[in-house]
Length: 340
Image (cartoon, rainbow, N blue to C red; front, side, top):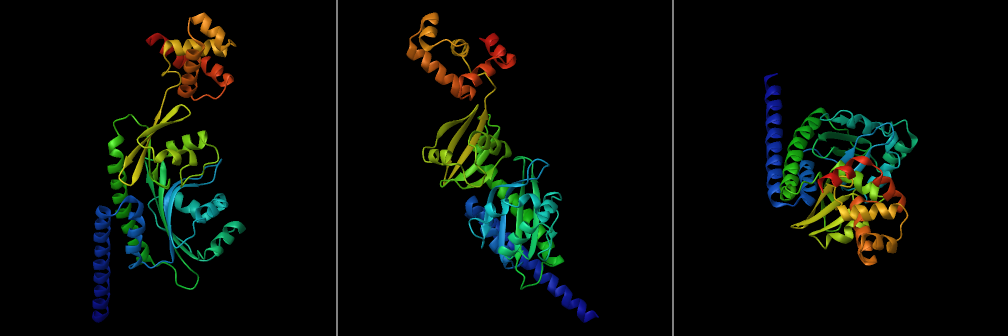
């Protein structure tokens, strides 16, 4: 009995030492590697202690009654490029994802192709996700959930209690160091009254994104579903520092080493209009032509055209109907008029 305890103690000590080395390596990676490689390299270090066949991580919105969970930023190890998009097709019925998203901070494990949803089951079989182990964390600053999921195939045993405990402790360190990296990068932009942020590579791949920025991009550039920035934004990355319009919002692109920081500023409706711009906009919405407005206000038609173009950009509208509807909203425009 005593001999057995000694063996158990020696095994525990060896595991603890291995875990300490893993965490120390994670700290070195945080100093030496950019955010683009940090999580992948960190999980490769964990792989020596908790073996896995593949891994997936990123930021995800929790599912609600009106929409399934959505992966907005992700990375992967030994999984194909199409993995996230493939998962998204059946995300609404994925029981395992719902379980882990509803229990932040808890390690959730499963074994077998057991999901009652046939499409989800087929997805798991396609990638041999026989033994999944996942943990999620709330990211209050982004409004999304951070997740890390490890997988093993059907030919090996599932993740043990001890491995789950090591995974949980390791992910605590991983998340903290990753957040420090992101905070260090976006700190340069915190003085510009931005309401949300993102961090991207030069190729448009997202390394961090906030829910507010996701919502604005999705609204203004329909069809976007995360992970890689839309082509319209990618086209501007090489021009950073620069500013681009997304409806009523301004997206500032700031270079930061090999990354680009995206800072979102949302303009109050109408608060950015000068008095003369507002007058031109009101006359145009009432049906007056450029020439009529120019005559009424003693301006040139070219100046009227410039004022209207600025109004459309500042207010984020795309038609005379939208412009008129916004101008009839009494609150922000009336406040702007009084200030001037």
